Length: 126
Image: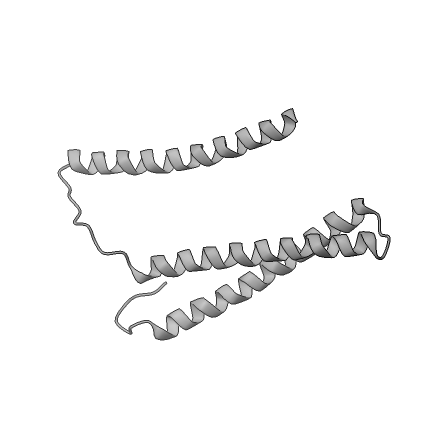
């Protein structure tokens, strides 16, 4: 019971730390620009940001779905094929997570290729 609580606390503490560092570094950078007299006009978000967000969400969705399917496959292996649960669950989770990451990568490559084909000719994409 204590282990689960500690893991949860450390997980949320890590997420908080990453977000805190991101926000404070942006604030410090902006304050330094103001002190030097540099101003930056707010620019509209580039469509590329939306593509990156879409790719991230797509990869997380594929990974989550593959891990969910692997738990189901592990249960089938354990109950019907009498495979030891110490082998069935971790083996199927790692196998399907790897397959999910590979599928997510292939989908990402396709999205990036389509975005490059549909990009205006005068805009520099790298």
